[in-house]
Every structure is written in C-alpha cells, then in structure tokens.
Image (cartoon, rainbow, N blue to C red):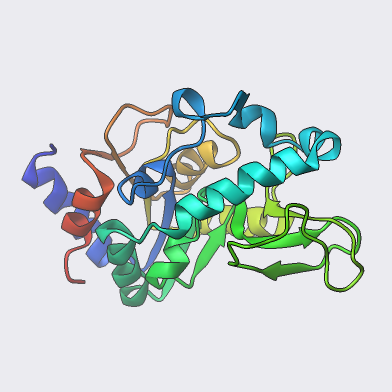
Length: 243
C-alpha cells in the first residue's frame, strides 16, 4: 500500500487542478467482479477472447461470437459500480474541465453516473447494424441468437472495437485533446500495453501534466510522477476524498 504522504501529495495536485483527464482499464472493473475475459482467464469453451473479438471471427462464425457476447452481457448485468467508479463521479462534478477515458466496455462508469466519458473501445450495451450502421443502446438479456436491425433487418454486431479495427476517430481525437490539455492525468488499473491508450500518459506528461498511476502491479506505462499501489476501489476514494 502506498505511503499516506504520497497520497496526500497526489490529492493536492488534483484539488488544485483546473483540468483533469482520467484513463481507466480492467483493474477498476475487476473490483466489481468483472472478469478480464482475456489472458489466463479468457478461455470460453475452446476459444480464447483474442480469437473471438475479431471482425474475421464474426464474419466466419457470427453465431459463436454472439453466443460469447450474450454470455458476457449476462455476467456483467449482475455487476455494480464500486467505490472507485463513484469517486470518479465526484471528481467529475468538482472539475469543470474533466474527461474520463475508459478502455472498458462494461458500462459501469455510466451506471455510476459519469457523463463526461469517452468509451474508447465501445460498449457491450450498444449494437450496430452491419449494413446501415445504425447504433442503438440495447440492454436486453434476451436478444435473439443472431439479432437483426429493426430498420433494415441486417445482422447486428456488438458496438465494440475488435482486434484489428480502428478506434472511432472522433473519440480518439477527443482523447488526445484531453491528454494535451490536462494539468493532472490519472491512470487507474490499466496494463499499459494496448494502443493507443498506452501512450496517453506519456503524451499528457509531455504536455506538462502531473501524471498519477494507481495499480496493483507494475504496468508498461512510462514513469509517472506518482505511483500509488493498491486496489482501485480503495485507492481512488482515498485520493479524491470528498472534493
């Protein structure tokens, strides 16, 4: 666990900052019981997440990919935001220039009340038509095995960014702008290996931001100005307090 003086120093930076950007990864959702669905814990039936979360897999076997997403949606529907999610809502409300960038697709930040948010990798709770491109929110746990668009009746897909796909350019541009303008850049629970998010902390630091990382393990991020060891659900509320 981090020394209280380190926490206090980071908290002082946050309380005096006029602009703050936050990047969150799987570590913040893990404290709500959300599985990573990747790596050692990512085996579903005989498939790995990395093999299913691709446009090629969906084109070849859409029924298998949708079965996997139906299963994920049912698991995540039972999860709730934890104190780290709640604390970031407090931070957002206390800072007029605030941006939350999340790599997570579970929707827990929105459920907690975050509104100034960029869901960089999309959301499990949105679907997108493979033909007309119409995107809608859909939180139903009883979707058909191969759901169809209400408008043109073409096949729907999860509105997430798969391996080999590009980030929405509007979301990417907004994220880069937030990195460049932030006085404080807070990173919570990300491994720092997935681009482009892995470069956000270094970009923010290069533009003068005080960078803070909260994690339980070493990440691949560049050296931050403050590195706080601990679980997100414990450390983020300590850091933000009652701003």
